[in-house]
Image (cartoon, rainbow, N blue to C red):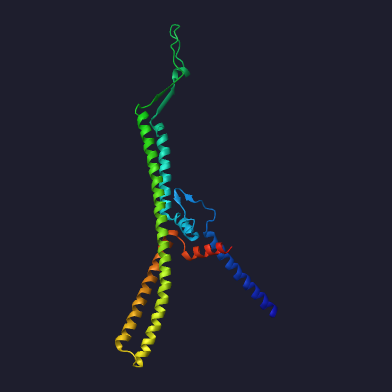
Length: 253
């Protein structure tokens, strides 16, 4: 019985360790280690590992993918414009039936019938319209590429702004927690003194109002912190905690 219990215990520990290892690998896979400093005209922050990873993840979101699809569509339109002139060229040909079944000679005279003939029609305007269409398609492609770069810059600014807001609210909340804790102690002391008749009701109410005011400030900061976190996660597409753990794992190695 003891042997079976030990085997069961060891098996359970191995399963727990494997699950923890899988979670660590999953978090680490979020991180892109070998990354350039510049991606399609967008510079990546190098002084903050977390900020860099947030930008990289944000640059893979749906808005950027839509911009990439527009670039690819413009590339296809350019290819179509380059080859469109073939649709305006008309070629024709036929085989002369008399060359297959020639008529009987007429008084020693053999009329000449070409075996086959070809013809073609090329509109004169093709030489001007084709050039203009290709030029317009190239400009449309350039516009799509510029719009994609602009969208990438905007997404980078949005995610870094949300990240800075997150850091600010987080630090402010730490300070506010300390202040609320101190004011709570002051309020508790004021309550005890009021019961003992050492202070007036006005002094007691002042301590209570001060504490409640800072408690409301704390709730507001907590809400602002949560909203900034949601904004980051909207842009990067994954929970922020996963990125934080992944960056910490990389730093710890």
